[in-house]
Length: 192
Image (cartoon, rainbow, N blue to C red):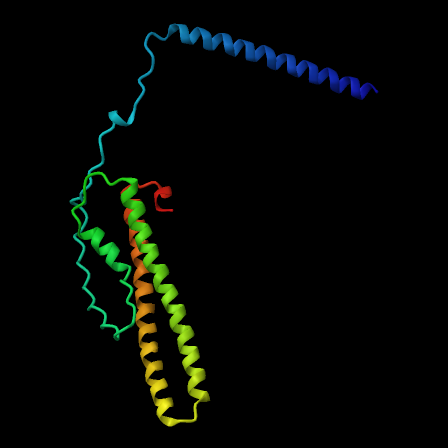
């Protein structure tokens, strides 16, 4: 019982000592504020100088990347999806206005992601077509029909390879857009 009373007394003394020290601190702060003649200078974005947009003179000039050859034309009747790299190339070739807004960045990333999604859907469809053709080839007895199905399978396989290359280019284009946006100080929410 004596221990409990002793602990309560120590807690009471410690809290009263803290209250006294807080009261003293409040009085000291009030006295300090009375001695300050002018309020402190508040800096805003208008007070800061804008960062230069161009490359620094110390940075070495980057070598231009070689331009890949255009993709082979698709067989007649086959839908073609524009490569996602074209979105990034168009964005790079346009003269850059000083201020690009949220609408510009959202449209750019949305177009690139839509092209990527179309290419992925096309790749899935081509893979399904290849599977169906392989099954048909096995189930046919007529050599003429088998050879026709094999030609169709080879065309679908070539188109699938081109589509996979486009998907790789589109993923790179999206990464470039995200990197360009990061360098331009675009808020991440604009690219969602």
